[in-house]
Picture 1 (cartoon, rainbow, N blue to C red):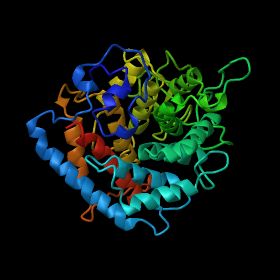
Picture 2 (spheres, rainbow, N blue to C red; picture 1 turned 90 degrees about the vertical axis):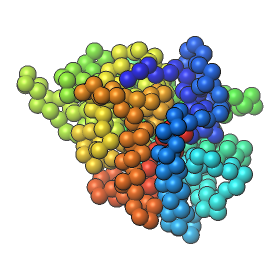
Picture 3 (spheres, rainbow, N blue to C red; picture 1 turned 90 degrees about the horizontal axis):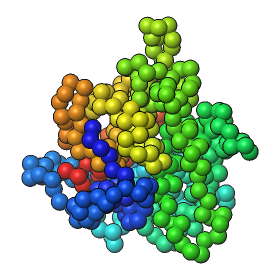
Picture 4 (cartoon, rainbow, N blue to C red; picture 1 turned 120 degrees about the vertical axis):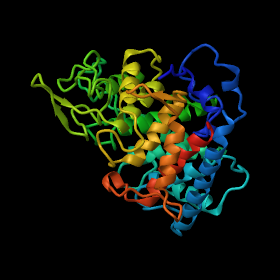
Length: 406
């Protein structure tokens, strides 16, 4: 893996991900100026040979969006009214479509945003009953991508709500608990997890630009406790130098990778030759961990960052979610594309020494998985992934990222 950039905003000006939100957003570092081609808003194909793949990606995106338009409920939501995050992810896919006309909005998108705004609660969260953190974080991104001034009050309140959910240090600033600094599914949740924390950091980073309004009061400009957030992130990493939890291991299979939450891996555990038990690192959470470190402004050469990139290099694949098989594989593709794009990585060197173009490989994989009607669906139902609206949204956002950097 080559060195990742220090300024995500500059990198994203040349990609689809959050393109509408990236003008001046995510200023998470003070690195030296990037090369001129990375600061230009113009997009050019990197090689003529990519034109064919790019055309195929655009065709797959169009088919997927057409399926989503037909599958929308008459009340404006997709999949279920109980979790607005599902609708928000679909709206992301529409907003991020390469070459879309920002002045022309499909009726499905208008109805989707109307539904999303109906889920705004008095406390600022965007949810119905359950999973307030998850639903608010994902919905906040969709509101930002819409680029509508009238959404600013809801955006600021949602940002403040997410910050209120962080597990804070005690009055002395102590971080004795590994959960301090993280964010879970909701207010009463005592066990933050990396998935929710990563989504929250994503939404908070993207919404920073709205804090430039000089008319905001002090309460509206509050920010996350970032040192505490870093504490939580590293407590989810298999890296004993920075994580003192007894499950953290530096054995070759797990070193540098991430798990779901301190003491909990969805991939189970490994019995080491020494007799110790290590919690297994796995793909989707390791990409989420890398993203979280970038949002928290850790330097590219920080040992925690280089360790997770090394784990990801050693476990690179587009065939499955490493250590989990098909469980959560579309989420894996989604977070993989976000993390590698944010780190401005065009190629990866695999553990056998081969250099691969991950965008082309991932695009080809998604072409083969797309159904004849334009949708995607996982045969494994864990984490709601037998829901075609969810899988299609994940796939389209992934292809949006791929398309604009081919």
